Structures are given as C-alpha cells and as structure tokens.
Image (cartoon, rainbow, N blue to C red):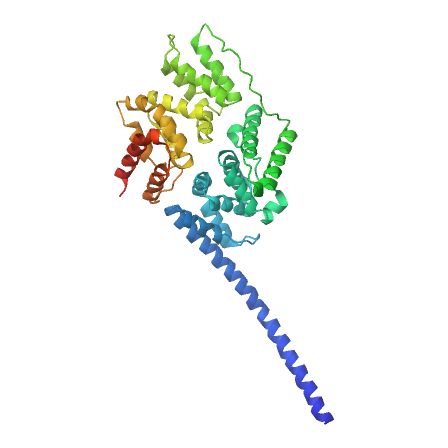
Length: 408
C-alpha cells in the first residue's frame, strides 16, 4: 500500500516535471508566434492602406483603421510600412488627411492612432492635419478624440490640438489660427463630447499662454484711402500677412471693384507675390495664406480665389481650382453658394470652362497616382445630390452632369 502511494507520488512528480518542461520549451515558440502575428499585422496594414489609396471609400478607411497595430514597439517591417505611408513628405498620408476633412471618423481615428509610432517630420505632418480638422470639422475631431481617449499616446501626451503649421507660425498668425480653433471647438455642444472639448480648449489656451499669444480682436475702422492705389493694396496685404481673417479678406475682395486707375491685374500680381518691400526675403506669399484660409472655410478667401483665377494662368490657376474643387466634399453647400455667386463671372472666361474644370478636376497633390478617380467623382455626385438648396437646383444639376461626363 505504501509502495503504491509512493509510486503515485513519483508519477505525480514526473507528470509535473513534464508539464514544466513542455511549458519552458513552448515559450520561445509562443514568442515567435507573437512576433509573426505582429509582422503579419504590419503587412496587412500596408495591404489595406494601399487599397485605401486606390479606392478611398468609408469601408476601406474603416479597414485601414482596424489594421493599425496597437503595440508601441516598431519592428523592421513596421518601420518599412510607416515609411511607405509617409513617403514623399507625407504625400501618401495625404489621403488620410483628405478623408477626415470629408468627415470620415475612421480616417481621423487612424491619424490619432498613428501618432504613437512616429516622430519628427511625420509627427508634424499628422499634427498639421489634425489641427486643421479641429478648425474645419470640430465635431469629427472631437468624436475621434473621444473614441481614442484610451490610446497610449493620447493618455501620455494628451490630444494634439495645438500644433501650429509652418505657414501660421508668425506670432499674429498663430494667435489667429488657435483662436479660430477655439471658436470652432466651442461651437460643438454634444453632451458626450463635452469633457473632451473642454480638455482640448484648455490645451489650446495653455499653448497660447506659453507662447504669449492672445486671440486678436477685430475693430472695424474706416478704410484709409491712399493717394497711390498700389500702396493701398500693399497695406491690405500686409494686414493679411499678419492676420488672414475674414474681415481682412473682405477688404482684399473690395479692391477688385475699385474703379480707380490701378487695375485688377496689378492687384493680382501683389496677391501672388509678396507685398513686403523689394529685396526682403519672405517665404510666405499672400496667395499661400488665401489658399490656407479658403481650405479652412474662410468665405471671403474663397471669393478672393474665384476673383483671382480669371487673371492668372498655369500653376497659380491650378492651385486655385484645386482648393475650390476640394470643397465639393469638404463643404458642398458652401461650394454651391460661392459658385452660384460667381457663376456669370466664371462663365465669362473665354479660354476655359472654369466650372467644368473645377467640378471634374482631381488634384495629384491630394490623390495619388493609380487611384480610381471614379470613386471621388461618384462621391462628389452623392454630396451634391444630398444638398437641400432648391434655389440652386439648376446649378447643382449642371455640376452633377459635368461630373458624370468624366465617369469611365
């Protein structure tokens, strides 16, 4: 009996030993499987991202978001995939930027999730896109922040809402830019987003305090009349280079109707090229600020572009039409309202059909080579068809007809 008990104990010890050995032997294999899954995950991320590039649909955006690994560590394949996404100074990442400006919540969440894997120039690229989103589509931005509030990078660093793009880093422009984001965020009153909204507002206010910035206050004054019309244009453009606000853009727009001898062509030349004194090097031309403001929904900046396009040709015209055409998906109602206001003006241009060009053009700077353009064209049609603007029905139908002609 004792012998049987002893054998039972010995058998139990042997069994435990075998289990321990098996566990120890299986550990390297388990780690290998985890690594293999990570590598497989990054490969899937690349494959899904490339499909998203070719066909930027909400479904592919969701798949890209879901494919981004949650781990903080980056292996060799992960680094290669990130280089692929951010290649050519973020050219490919631009599809994420465009889709979240169109209101795609998963594109915005993808941008936030990518933050934990990147630094340096890539961090600036994503920061710039999220900052613009906070101003253009504050509800989408806050919803994305709310959904990603448990993300490791967000929990450690907070929400990236105070990043100032290079074009706005001059003190006065930075104050204006951050002030516009505060204004946009405060317009969101959804109860479930209140906590995130308040935190983002505090972060912007803290950023402004740290930089010694104050939100500029607009005081309407009577426009000074200069003896030299050229000096009046320069004065307005200098104010725009300080604060590219709707009020200053409205002043610039008024110069196009000035009936004095100084003609519109010269106004346009000063918009395209720096209004500062000759020989003083500047990297920001007035047109750059007008384009930036137009992309953020500054209505008078959009009108300045529509007035300017008649008097320029080549690359400047292309930049203007790109900015206007992108509005079809970013803010289709605003697009139609401004197009209706300037329709006769645009149709009087003899060289090209501006409205046709604007409706159908897809920018190489925002959409990569090899992308199925029909995806964007069909989405433009859907956006226009969804508008409830009966007073502009004929123009909406006209734009839809122009776009349909370009479908394959």
